[in-house]
Amino acid sequence: MIKGAVAASAVALSLAAGPVQAKETVKIAFIGPLTGGASSIGLGGRNSAQLAVQLRNEDPDTEYDYELVTLDDACKPNVGVQVATKAAADREIVGAITQYCSAVAMAAVNVYHRFQLPVIVWGAVLPDITYGNDYPEVHRVNGTMINQNETAARFMTDKGYEKWVIIHDTTDYGKGHNKYFSKSLKANGGEVLGTFGVSADQQDFTAELTEAKSMDPDVIYFGGLTPVGVRIRRQMERLGIDAQFEGTSGIISDSYIDGLGDLAEGTVAFLEGAPLSKLPGGDYFKAQYEEAGFSEPAEAYGPFAFAATGLLMDTIEEVGPDRAKVTKALAEVDDADSIVGKIRFDEHGQNEVAQITKYVVQDGEWVVWEDSEYASGERSLTGAE
Image (cartoon, rainbow, N blue to C red; front, side, top):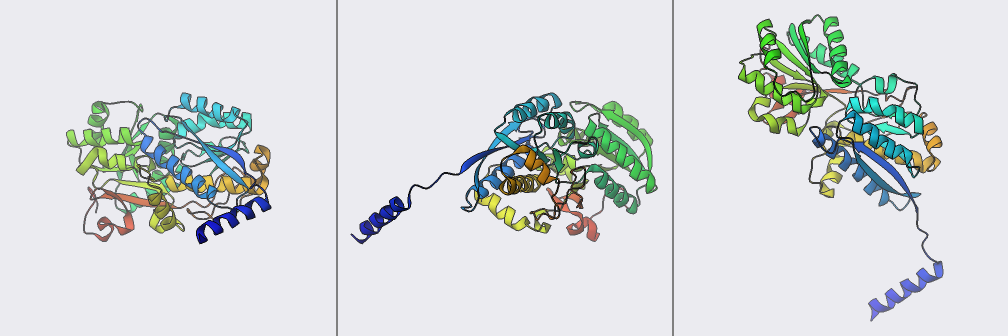
């Protein structure tokens, strides 16, 4: 009886106060590789963006309700242009969180500029995405391959390695890594014995690896994504190549380890940002992601996708769902707080706060170098002094 009276009173108060006004729904887009060889990263990014939207919509103090439109670029430039055009041509979409694959991002930035759609890149690392054009619509929360390769070259030469063979895929992403790593390696006293460009769908590397073996390198550096990296590392073993394997952020994924098993052990690679445990909001993100119950892991770039989505929604809350106003406001972002740390865009839309973390595969996991048994001396890299 008491419960019924309370419920009736609540209804009466609600009617007296008038109907609750629904918030305006604002659409934002997420674009990444949801299928294909890089899909594990893309799905982690999508989930992270969706998590940011879910948490924002649960906040009663927000001005708007947000709807995430997810689009699959399959890590293919032609598909990327198609889905970028689809998103940009939809005037209900106010902004977008875009691209993990650099080749796709390079193909798509012209679309975003032409349609004046403000975007925040969440994973692609080629410098020209932000620095190659004067496009005010394009921003990026993660660092670039310049920072990554400076750290990679310095770290490995400090370990006493002297001679490298470089294998890179022939996309803009792979060619960019070759360019910046080779430059940094030379500056740090390393020697490149040979360089091989391979296609992103190549299966057999016998010719390249046989020639590389004859050069007797200390290290084989790979600039490309997980699927090719797995094939190269496996075929190195088959051909008896006794060289340290070094990769870029493109191979830091669970699928790299899943594809190689024990052969992944000791692989080193470098990534923009820091691991969850060392990020300002890492514990919070991890707890929220686990509670949401996603079936795929967030992967290495999930925190960046989460941070980019949050920043986009913060900006829309501030200036309203207007593309031009959002673009202008993003250009003024200076030391914005996020789970990945401060975000400060330079005049090109590039986040200036770049941190690079060194990783090594240990016992089936990517482990921060400083926390690993390799750093403590309990284990040794191939050929390390």
